[in-house]
Image 1: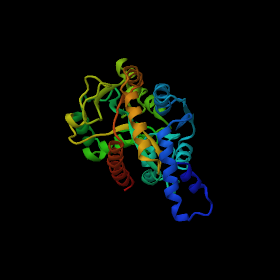
Image 2 (image 1 turned 45 degrees about the horizontal axis):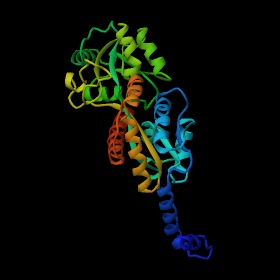
Image 3 (image 1 turned 120 degrees about the vertical axis):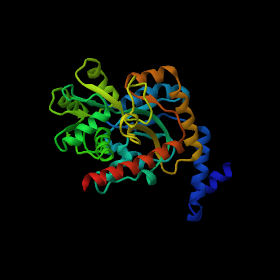
Length: 322
């Protein structure tokens, strides 16, 4: 091993051998991983990304035997930082759909989800809930579709920013149901919910955590969840697909990523420890209480979800722009 290290440190060796030496170095690092603190980079404090990171980090640290630091950055900054980080497993990205849908929302983004990152695992998933103001005379999805068709362009729905899960869920509903419910955009989910509660808008597609308190108090009425199957986060609610709009599905998901070229051995090792962490009962409960379900899985499953979600989002956005 000492001879190989001396060979790789020799400045006279040919450039063609650089990748072989780099591969050897990373393989050695993988055997000893982690030898120092691991950093999970995510967006600003207070949101679902930050909360998920802070639930997972201390338990993951116990499993790895090293400190796991949550590093809060702006959304774009966090993505750019990890894309440029060394592929050694010490800098990871916890991201939402904005990582793979930004290309539909803005030009000249500095990262590419397939070029610059490797998926490790999906972490959590959360349904959106189709909710209406109590004044709207509908009790189920079928009645809402019928009303929207009879009053085309008269109903409105509130959503967060362009590209948010509440926006995509709303536009997908419009397109699949063949209706025109006008979108009213707000700066975030909080203002969007306030607009619905006060009657400024008539319906919305917030996540289950945001909707639940107002549904329980009777200030809004829940009709259905947007996931393909019923969700324990919205007990008793049917799916949109089963109650009037077959094939409809929309959900939010968060995933963990490493920089491209991270060795497969490291990806598999981190994935195994993440899955063990997500299966801990107290971690599951903390995430559930925050409005999300833990979703252990493989890198291939996260990659497949991203491909499907990108195809759906791209189709929705292109039709919305027409």
